[in-house]
Length: 470
Ligand SMILES: *Cc1c(COP(=O)(O)O)cnc(C)c1O
Image 1 (cartoon, rainbow, N blue to C red):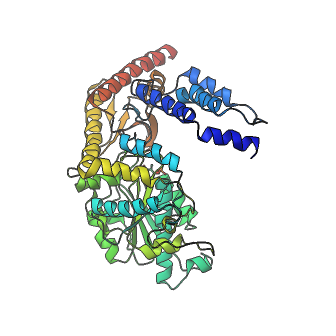
Image 2 (image 1 turned 60 degrees about the vertical axis):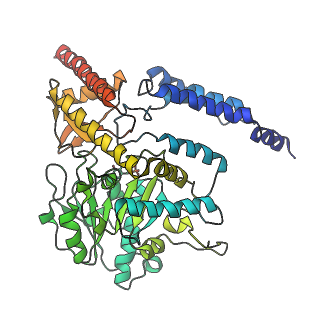
Image 3 (image 1 turned 90 degrees about the vertical axis):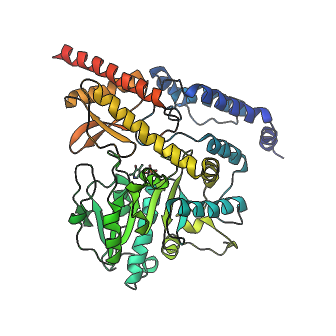
């Protein structure tokens, strides 16, 4: 045995190394709810500690972990807590986080059942739970991917396969050269990752037939062109700015009867369909063919976790197909047939644990709370001087604007500097806005009030600065 092997073998059996990592993690968790949401300037500057050349020689495992904690932990964004409203980022359900911790020691590869029977079993179980939770057709299958970007890609790959197969064109063999034309129809407010998925699938952004949207970003159903069996129609559950939902009940059945493939980008919004009080938002979505959704947003699983669900198993599997002489097909589920990757980490473990823990009612309650806190935010901020809410808060997103664009920009900057909470800017209907996404289960009434107060303070600072410079 080499010296290195000996050293690593002793480290593998060195509980104190793993306990050290765990205790740093626990120390982090114990402070994260009250910490500055964004790293301090000092923490950001200290990141330069990592700018070193790759060491020549093997070091000490304890020192690696110590360095990571010393400079890494303070430079994280406290999105696990209750006052991070940037992008659309969830916190973590503790049972899911703990399950991930356990699974880290297993280090499973979920490509095939033979590689990880436990992962194969959990994928099968969660696929069924998802289908039941959302009320999708029994035949629905699911692939567990890194996020909705990838899930959108997979949904459109399945659609592309099916449309061409209906034209007796084998995409896998012939590609798109000389293939029958595929039409792509989507709303002007489609998420940028939908456009990326269109491009990656070779369908061409330039070929999109754009449908007009109304003030909340919803597709205007009457503006959808006549569809046919060569069309992929892409809808949205949860606009990334306003949180609005396309009107599935008036669009889906009709589009389906015209033979179109319907894909829904429901990264965070699809979860409305798993609640009693917000389910009306997704009414009719079960008539689609593929659905993309994230675990790591509204469901609050650890990163990363995305899901592609598809009612056409053959299309999904064929479009992501691979084979090789060494592949041992399992008796049950081989996860890699449902995803672009072969080797994959077992993100299903956290997803399963999150569902197993929360149950249907827990999911319902957690999602509904995000909606209630977003409404609270909108109510409180619209009472404060100088802020107006631009959207109808149907889900978890709030769009806020100040009197002028300059002030809006400055308020974003000052809120970020105060570090009580974190929000980002966006462009909404051509205007610069502040976008608030309530996506963490931790967020309570106090967090909202505290954050609104930080907005008020930020506006005062911004207002003074602008007056000074005038
Ligand atoms: C976040 C988001 C995506 C992309 O999802 P990732 O998990 O970040 O890849 C796609 N669509 C919408 C509407 C989103 O909010």
